[in-house]
Length: 204
Image 1 (cartoon, rainbow, N blue to C red):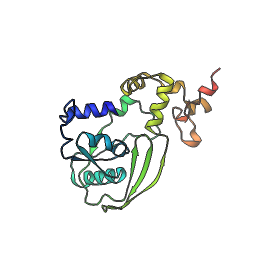
Image 2 (image 1 turned 45 degrees about the vertical axis):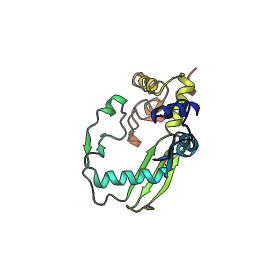
Image 3 (image 1 turned 90 degrees about the vertical axis):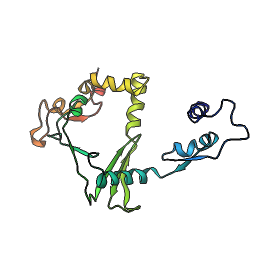
Image 4 (image 1 turned 90 degrees about the horizontal axis):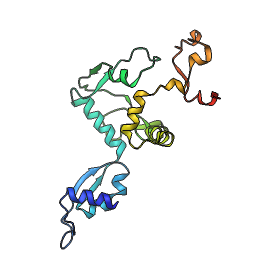
């Protein structure tokens, strides 16, 4: 917290010894997420008032704006066979098809991948035309936390670099490991993951 105050204070022209007679009138900045509540007092000390906004509502309204009013900002990809495996490199090369604004893109499902995962049904442009219909506690935070424990990574950039060299089939059990090849009766390719980390429990 002290480091946050020091960095933010320098960025906003806070004198090292503080303001004589107290801080000036607070400037307002809109913010979402838990940090906008947790660090509100720290920001007020440097003359910034955090105007908290609901995170899910802000995301939905922002995406509604992009879908209806912002050409060249939303794109779709067509990966081909949904059961085929995509490496990070091949996924990055997928052709992007940018969408034109739509007058009525509703209804749609908005899946937010953050520390966890939220699945939101958006039914219209109104302030309350959405609801959370599902989600999971297993998300980006789980991935980052496991990698910190298993690989002792110091940064997320280091972790991403490791994913470019790693081979998931060394630890993941594939359909081919179970059936000896493709599973024609289920129309599953031999390279489809059947159980994440499944090979770890089989190792001697």
